[in-house]
Image (cartoon, rainbow, N blue to C red; front, top):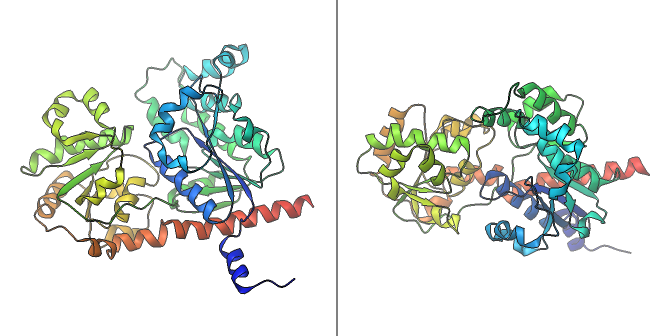
Length: 424
């Protein structure tokens, strides 16, 4: 049977045609991980695969049979409405078993963030439609969901694990502000659990160069690949008068917004900023006086994040802490807008990102104030200029769906092929 040229091209562009991919991810929204997951789903579908996205909650009681409890998650994730939704979570009664109390809850009240997440994933019930199915590939996000991934793989499908930064480091930062019992869980003990879980994957994907280097050193026996995530692009117009700062409610973002409000904003009079995202509640709680002084700036969570960039003329990235690739920095680059960013905001990218025309990188509050004062007087770019900007081109070459799709297709197809050859 002959194959036409067009069919050959279609096969090349869709190397995963007919493959079934279980995509396991935390039931999170309004965060970097969620944006990465959306890119994964879009890429697999563009590669021809049938994708089964499975949102797994770490909160007790969020099991699939309780459909009503997922209402708020569904409302906050309308981008997932384009296909079937699947869920995973642990019933309350599983938490009262002696083994859970002894092996998970007791270490958790000492600050062991790793053990509680792994324990919840081990006990998670899944939507029957995905629990009983077979897959060609399981793509897992975050080490603590590996118990679910292994269950779905059934020792037959390969597991591709997206590491999303070194999580033990994040857990240690979280624990600094928590009143855990002593002795507290150590970074080393949580890291050991993280690494042991990762050993069950066939390929480890890393979102940035720093993360890849760390894990290659920690797990030299595993296969690794650096693959920048597909970040949904922000609109490049029509443009507007807004100076925007986007921040969700996590520790690094809260610290960064507070730094900006205390060290930069008071020294740039006459400049008004729109602070978008659910960071507002944390700022109000942690620094009520600062929040009150700039209350009009906080817009809270918005239904259409893209509109924030569409109607802006300048993006501020006053990041002073955090690890791993900053998803919101990539989103800002994709908008083609001028940026003022701390060096920390551009972490995880090549040095070239710090020297892009239209991106002003600063290392102090004084430099940020100076850059903001100058940029506030600039005329806004039109849509054509934004689309042709260096920041937008940098995004398209490294973080666009097309770039991600091409690399993911090669890695996933090779992994599936190797697994099938070994089992033959």
